[in-house]
Length: 164
Image 1 (cartoon, rainbow, N blue to C red):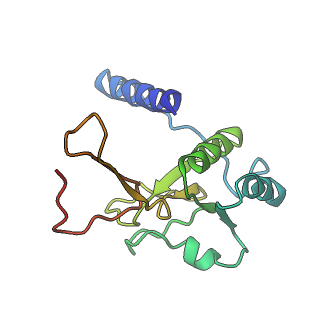
Image 2 (tube, rainbow, N blue to C red):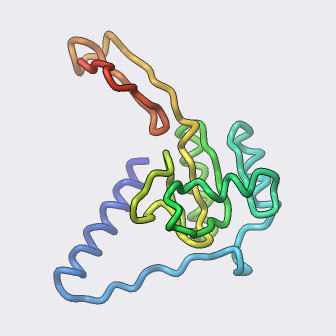
């Protein structure tokens, strides 16, 4: 995961340098459902079979209408090519690798609240972390004398909960 973060940071730095230097940045061309490079049903089935608790939904599957409308901002009408609901970090890693192997535009969504629509693109592979909702505490963690709390991306902490 550290290498992936490093790659993302590198791209951000390259893009910001290009903008500062006045260089033109050409966005990468990704594979879409209309292209022959798009993963087949068997490819998506294999991803699902390797990670049974992960849910992979593609166009034509039951649940597609709901899955393809995860973005709550109704002025954004983009439709993903496929949606994957992950439940843990190994699922996230598998989906990132899958998107790299097939040159897919990977977008990540947690709650669906997005004002400008950065969490979706036409024909993207949409990774939902909504089911990663575990909240755990470790009262003996060395980082803080009161203990540590881990909230996964889909976890909610209600108002009034104190974090020491």
